[in-house]
Amino acid sequence: MENAKIKSTKTTFSSNKKWEELIESKDFIDVFLSEVLEEYIQKQRWYGGKSSQLKYIELSEYFRIQQGDEVYFGLILEVNFTEAFYHHYFLPISFVSDENFAKENRILPIKLKDQEGYIIDAMYLESFRKVVYERISNALPVDKTPVQYHKSETFNFPKYKSSNFLGAEQSNTSIIYNDTFILKFFRRIYADKNPDYEMSHFLSHNKEFKHTPKYLGSINIVDSENTNITIGLMQELVPNKGDAWEYFLKEIHKIYLSIDNKQIELKNLPDIELFKRCSIVNLPPQIVDWVGLNLLTKVQLLAQRTAEMHIALGSEFADTSFTPTRFNGDYTVWLKNRLTYQFQNRLNLTENNLHKLDDYSLKLAKEFLENKNLIRKRLVNFDWTKLKGERIRIHGDYHLGQILVQDDDFCILDFEGEPESTIRDRKVKQPPLKDVAGLFRSFHYAIYSTIFNHQEEYSKDKEELFEFGELLYKYFISVFLETYRAVTQEANLSIGYTNERVYLLKYCLLEKAIYELGYELNSRPKWTIIPLKGIANIMNS
Image (cartoon, rainbow, N blue to C red; front, side):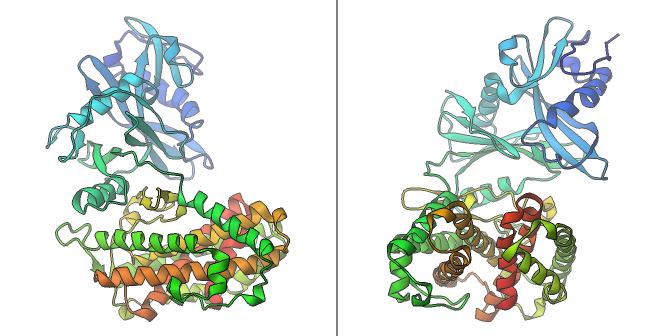
């Protein structure tokens, strides 16, 4: 009889079974899920339920990851919350008898029929990482087993040399192999193919889009309901010099320092209308001198790469999950339902958090609440019948942090989609300008973040720094839109006529800023000014 009386990971669990049979033991599973894993997973960075009350954990699926005599188990855990929703997580486990392998990642001390040791998260074990690498690198072209390893037909993997962690991540665990490849294990998983896997495979394998990490392989499992679930994505490791967010923060700081160094006055800088397109050669010389030709050229290149990504995503006619489609009533109903719910949530949050705001933020928050009926009307008045452009699969969570800086170029990654969205919502075809709006909001954030982080280094007061920032934002948009429109138009990607583009941009920017408002009110009230200013810009434009 097995000993099921265990209260924490400090107590040893005893079983008369071998490791290979342990997962079939009901006593072990009961204890493991209810008394051990609850404590363990709530401490993990990738656990997304920290703000909710965990109710219980169920073992949804399990499968073997093995090679020869080496056996590991992949667990799909269903975590149920008292608020009546659930998450699924992927956890690979291993048994080790040497305590040196179980220092940071120990889940449970255990005494089995033939030996004593520990159950650990297998990710921390090099032998497990090696097995996974070899299973992908030797994958057959067609795999019909429940655990399906896949590799690109155009690539031959070298022999395994080394593996290590990329670093702390929020929702995934990434492993670097041979200092050349990266395997992203999805910890929070969904009952479907992960959008990151689908988009990566499509862009680099089907369309040979050069500005995203090359797809090399994947691991998918087919569960008991015949659903294909993505567990891992293997890509080339792209050499980079940090992300575009860090790059823009440094460059914008230089722009703000130059206000004092060059004694620039706001009244001497020509204004420009929001969304008015302008090429760099036609910009006022005072603006080029202030912002710098280098950064303006980078904005232009970012627009070109974004356009090329959308052209690749909008040029498929065989795979229906990627074929462009028109706006219609079904999309409009989906959009309005989603946004009216989200908008009401943000209104409630704002009303309940006014006491956390002051000065300009408080003024903008009150303006937001006063204009709630106008904003709601703007959201529900989406009229698809006037839109002639196409909807395509898009990045979905496009911002400067998702773009790597290379020597003189950019590389786009992380196609998982908006974290708050369901897996189905992430795959809905959207106007490509929604990605563009996401990047514009990221520009806005980078400008205001620079002010918040370096305010004491500038001589101007905060309000004037904000005004400089709004002008800079308009010129970033102007240069970006000129290139983006030219590149998409040349490739015949249908993004709509001029008024339609402006209408969609305003709509998507409003939607994005309302989405951001929730995060800032909950996490960084000081930064609430950024989405509130974004909302005000659209409503007043």
